[in-house]
Image 1 (tube, one colour):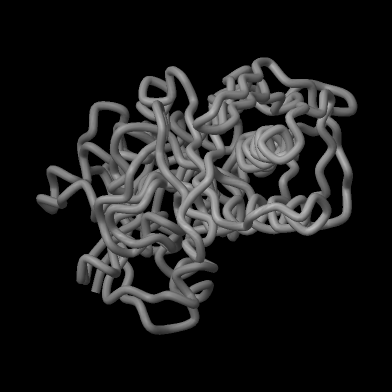
Image 2: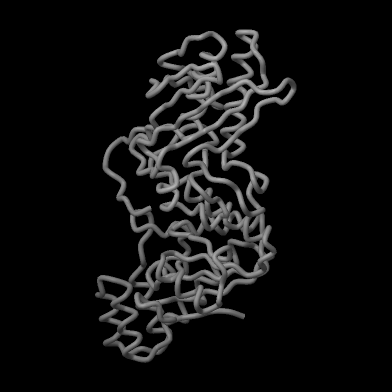
Length: 362
């Protein structure tokens, strides 16, 4: 996540699934009673009972429509401020609650996700929240439990271009997400969720070898290096731990970790969260690595006084010492230990121009 976390206490927000549930509740109640509750109050999976104002309401013979503007709190969520619109309409007897994708909601096109191909990208968590809420209202007002629920987010297709949806096989718009219903600022839950889904899609496609990259430069470089398809690429970012712990439970045959020297030095030094605010490079340890490779005392001392890992790599390059290979090997050892078997590992270190400068493999 590119945005820097602000100082001080941060305000929590609401997931897209929560906003869709609130809008669905308001629309369905209007369908049953003729009146829209505003604000509308819902109960989340952990017992919270937030209330939401409606941004639009419309009742016709064909159904009811209500909308809620998403407030993601202080999280830099791409959908913050988006209007989540839900249309609820009567359906055939015994058909149950059916979900449809309106404007800005994606459709699943690849296996591996927790939804069948062809289904609207409304995840199981939000579906369960909406179903539970509507069934409760049906019991309260003696209404039918056979309805269609169509969710729309105007501009959702443009917002989705800033997410990993296309790579996951979700086309045409956003996913409706949310497990607890609450957005914890800077928890990066949606990013880690996308990492897990990317692994699931790759496994479902039968891919034996995938690559996880820390950034766009290393991703492009490793894709070219191995000729990977889009589905074989996982945008890991700083979340090595989130990737590896999931792969430990859902292994693939081979994993390539690709990244820059500084990020993968952190991994080699045992850090699984590679963000600059949560881990740092041990410069003294890097200088010791140079000594172990046979550097002169002068180079080792200059390395110990360096301000960045890239300065130390430059010193190693000038002295023709394979420091990047050694770091790649250390990162591979940490990765293998975290995976605890089941997956072979390669580590590739690329410079800022996408050139391979260090590698460790079998």
